[in-house]
Length: 77
Image 1 (spheres, helix red, strand yellow):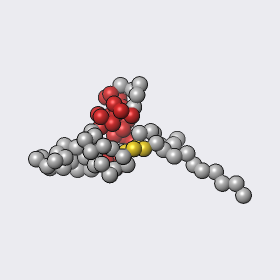
Image 2 (spheres, rainbow, N blue to C red):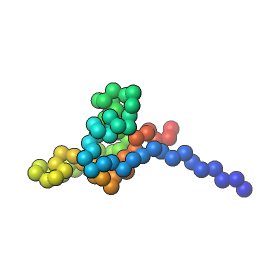
Image 3 (cartoon, one colour):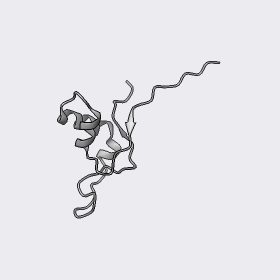
């Protein structure tokens, strides 16, 4: 019996200070920044659609948490 592993989708754990923009800059070389951010958000709806932390909180305006899995490649087609 032969077993074949499925390809793994590339993902990262973000750094504490990461935003969509910093992840796009670091991980999405050769793609325009605005397009890269849009791609990341579309591949990570589990984070993008999360309610934003309240104003005045340490993470205000940024839904990305250091424990999130952030996909930096599209889903297998």
